[in-house]
Amino acid sequence: MVKLRGVNLGGWLVLEKWMTPTLFADTSAVDECTFMQTPNASIKLRNHQKNFIQEEDFRWMRDNGVNAVRIPIGYWIFDGDAPFAPCIERLDWAFTMAERYNIEVLVCLHGAPGSQNGHDNSGQIGTAAWYRNKQYRQQTVEILDRLAERYRDHPKFWGIELLNEPRVGVVQWKLRQFYNQAYRRLKKILMPTTHIVFHDAFTPRMLSAAIWDSSDHPITMDIHWYHFTFWAHRLTPLRWYWQLIAWHGRLVGGLQRWQGVVVGEWSNMLSHQALSRHPSKQHQVLLDEHLVRQLAAYRHADGWFYWTYKTEQRGDWHFRSLVEDGRVPHGWQD
Image (cartoon, rainbow, N blue to C red; front, side, top):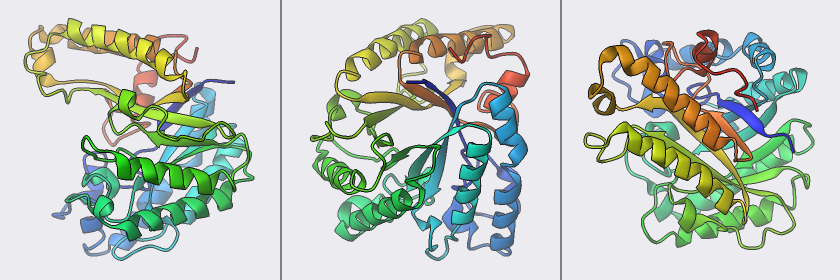
């Protein structure tokens, strides 16, 4: 199996203000839900969706060794749900580009009805009502069902991710129930080579093998690793992160005994506090070492997707700029 060396198309079909601040300029909006309630929001959104990711981006990906994209979408993609607006035609277009440029597609449900995490990447900041409402969970399965039906025969449909970064406590029973219900529905629709992907809810060892009867369809766990959100980062030396990254590489190997594993989101970012203990002239060198160490560790997975392909500002969140600036080492596709 060819390993995926991919990027996320973040900030495109699910808005995140920090990624495209110009779009939110002169508004008090903090997420897509509040943005869509501002003047001329529909026109602005359509222009953004047509211009932020274009055919030239897919061409660049192919020419530079990117062989996969993970595309975040919201539950409103088909029919909308005021104030959210539908955008299924843009996802159709992305599949057309993916076939033209030989790029695999992982579609990820980032925004579920009621929000599964209360973060901007779900479309609305606030409470995570998805867990308290059985109808929301059933609606989520139906949306996944429609996506599977629509793209099942597309040659570049690598996989479908059931839910992005669900926020759960110690008891994960409702999430496990949802994963298994969705799996049973989707495996009846999808081609036998299309991957059904579930997120680890930031507890990979606890949720490993969460889908019980998975012997007859490819199952993949998605893990997200970021190194600037650790609660004790003000006290943590960089050598601890280097050790953590190496351990992550070993962890992937253990988890692959039970299912496939992709690192669906990761980035080169380190916290300001972690870097501030070093002279400023060393910061880029340390960030580049951080990148190299992660590439070495995550090569053991079935694939990875950098967060993100691009933002308005170049820098360590912007994979394309890292490649163009020569900061990604030669052979990173291996």
